[in-house]
Length: 204
Image 1 (cartoon, rainbow, N blue to C red):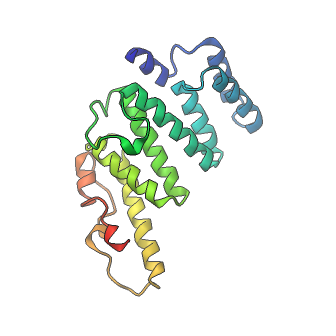
Image 2 (cartoon, one colour):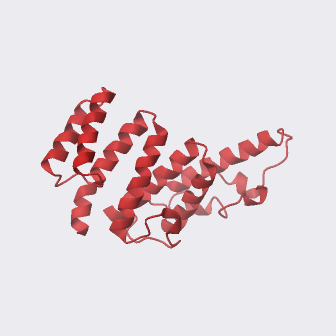
Image 3 (spheres, rainbow, N blue to C red):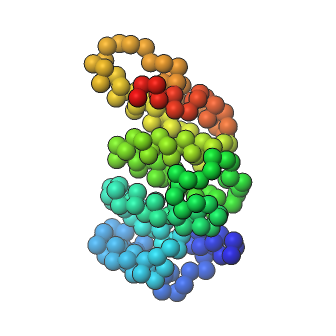
């Protein structure tokens, strides 16, 4: 079962009809309606296949349909959770490091799906989901194998900028948590460079 999921994430051992549909979608990526029709064929044949979800996500993401891309990321989280034996709802996942963040296909699929969900939440101005998804990533991937600390730094900068605008840009100095937002380190040091999570919570 694990090997089959790993192959699926890598786009290997696809059912013939799904492989053909995904190939058709790739061949017509410049023709959005035709590519989408091919992806719908693939989805009808294998709605929970990781390769299909990845292709759908990319199609919507690069087409700037961010809300649709986030919906696919949410579906991918459910599929990844089932493969790892985690709760279906990401908010119910235990805050503890997942093994295999650098090498296990199932774990990396889940972490990248959560990172994609967080990024799209940030782009869609869903600040609470962006913050909470990144806080969970910090615990699931403390070595920052998927590079989520950089996104958390960007989120904090955006939050600090919004607070400055809300306050009329009165020149007040940001707190320490807001200053530590330019991530240049890697691994666990990347998270450490940000200081404590939820640094802006005191601001409401």
